[in-house]
Each structure stands twice: as structure tokens, then as C-alpha cells.
Length: 220
Image 1 (spheres, one colour):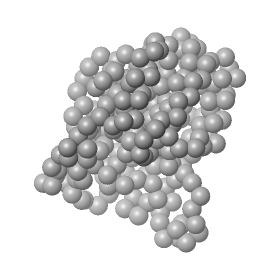
Image 2: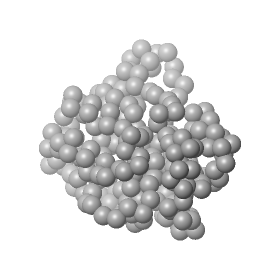
Image 3: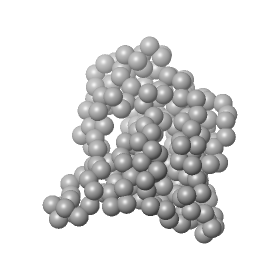
Image 4: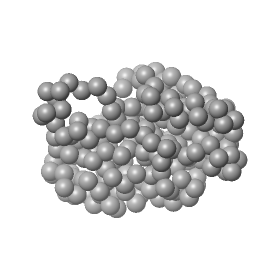
């Protein structure tokens, strides 16, 4: 079922207040939650908030079913899919499993940017406004699977290049996870694994932590 957002516009939301609701109390992982997309919305042109699905996605259900087999105090969740599905999954897992979302999205929103859509923004604002405080049983990092890619020169000439790669500052190091008594990373993904994340999960595995991969099914 779609929600009717025809009367709502971006200017009706305070991106900083929405950021604070998503951010909540991050605790150990506060330094990894990125504010850049929210801050850049201050200069984004106003538009009518787009409708979105008011249900739990297939991807959410797959993750919920699989993580029931693990101790979330010892298992860090990584989810890499499109930004739209990441935001939906973040909201669903927060409500279903008390998993606190950590957004690694680090792009600048721009009206002519390669990365980011009005639907992404609509989901950030609408679902963020619905977040309420609650228990935290674990954390889930969310990664935009389309954060960078091969673009034709003519596309780069026409659009603002706001693509980015993840660096060592964007995901928790192995020693930190060990200090926090984590034993594994459970990595959910939909597209081909990009080089930056592949490097990270190999590094985690080489440093004595288990890495479990699940390829998610469904439309993205």
C-alpha cells in the first residue's frame, strides 16, 4: 500500500532533526554514521515527497529470518544494496529486531548528481520522522551498492560527480570489533561485491574474525 504524501514537500522537514532521529544514540559506532547527505539537503531544490511502499520488503524478511540464528551481541551486520532498499531495510530492521542503523552514505545531494534520487530523500525524511527511541540489541551498517561505478565521459560532463568509495575511516577496524567482543561480520548484499568492501571483509577475515556472506534475492 502506498502512503499519500502529495501534500508533503522537502521544505516541510528539517533535515538536521531527521538526522538526529536516525542517528539516535550510536554509542560505539557514532564516528561511522555519516551526516553529509543530510547536511547537503539544506541546498537541495524543494520538491513533492514521493510515495513509497508501506510494507516490509522481501529483503527485510530475508535478513530477519537469517539473523535469528546468530547472537547479535557478537555479530555485526553489514547490508549492501541500493540506497532506497538500504533505507527501507534500516527502518524495518530497527522496528523488527532493534538493530540500530549506521549509515555509511557519504555523498553530497545535488540536483544533478550521479548518486542520490528524490525517492532516497523521501524515504530518509518520511521513515526518519517515524523513528522512535527503543532498545538496541545490535548494530547494522548500511552501504549504498551504487556509490560508484563506471560512467561514460558524456555522462560525467553533464552531471555532478558525487560518487565515492569507502575508506578505512568508514567501517570499524578488526581490533575495535575484537575489543567489543564481536566474533563475526554477517554481510548481506544484492549486487556484485565492489573492490572497497571486498578489501574490507578480506581484511576482517585475515584478522581472525569470521565473515559470513548472504546473497539477497529480490528486486533492487
